[in-house]
Image (cartoon, rainbow, N blue to C red; front, side, top):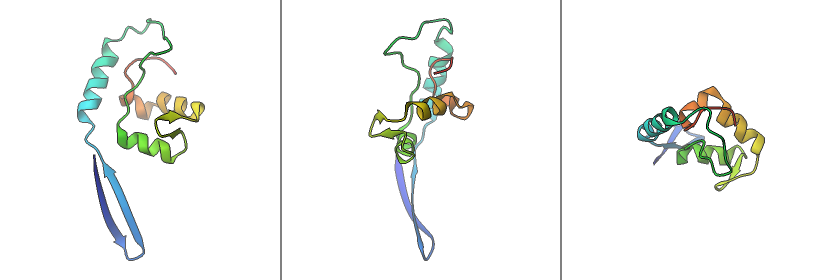
Length: 94
């Protein structure tokens, strides 16, 4: 993960975080394709693998605090959003 600081204008300071997630996304796709859609969900069922940079954004949005989910409804919406499908490691709705 890389953080880059820059000033787009004289009154603004921006810190941008970048992370190469290509290996994680490929691993998620492989796990997603290996999972039986009819397999039962258990308490410790892994449903997603989220990169640290995205997890930091979830903290900023108030969905998480550290690595603890504080807004279950918002986290489920995030995981069920088709835009975030590449983080999922199994099919179905959370």
